Image 1 (cartoon, rainbow, N blue to C red):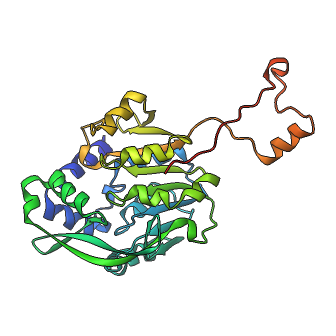
Image 2: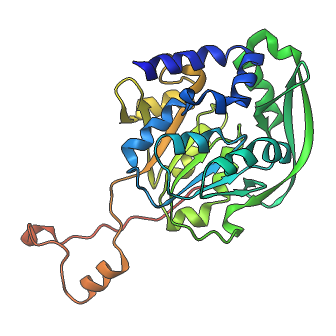
Image 3: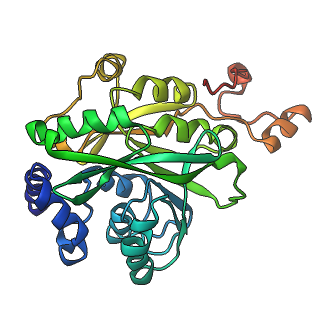
Length: 309
């Protein structure tokens, strides 16, 4: 019941610009609000608290997601954060790394190529609204209207150039089990830059839903992943049906009760099991993999490997 009230309160806070930025900038004093995103509770269904594999926080901002993962009970595994905005790193993320252990921060964003790029930043009455930072100016303008209505006209947008890099070009060797991607309308480019990594690995992926790029993300991942929605009231991950996906493609979200902070989609590896090298060597030597239905089960599916771009 308290969790339900908390996320209704967060929804109210996010409708009032200056209150929102004040609370989020000082969330260390409002720890009862963690995790600030209700969908993070699904991680307790997906992973054990003693999870040793690595989480990636892509679009770390001021570190709220990373704090949320720790406050959920994931205290020992490594969290790697990617955030390009030096102001946020120096003034907020530095405090997170002091208060929580085993957090690695990379001071750049991710994309499908390595370059320097303009990051657009929103200001309301000279107050920096960093959680709307985006490399996509059109997206940022639309997001401000969506979130704040008529108040969006009072926002100023400024730009600063930061570094972004391609994940596949980084020498990251950790065993990654979970990716959180929230980069304000630039999410598909992050995934395109991880194409080789995703061919070899199948981490659970949580992506912020946006009508402008959902279809691109879905198309890129659909051959290896199924889409899920976290039902907060039932504490259950629900696999999306074809009709649900078509609704999302057309811009209709699946749930309105917590609309301001809940439009996220989980991509979870589908259940068709890929044979490992040892399995293939067993088959070559004449050993079948399963005896229960031996007379009618020695069949192998050959399925095309593909990540679309």
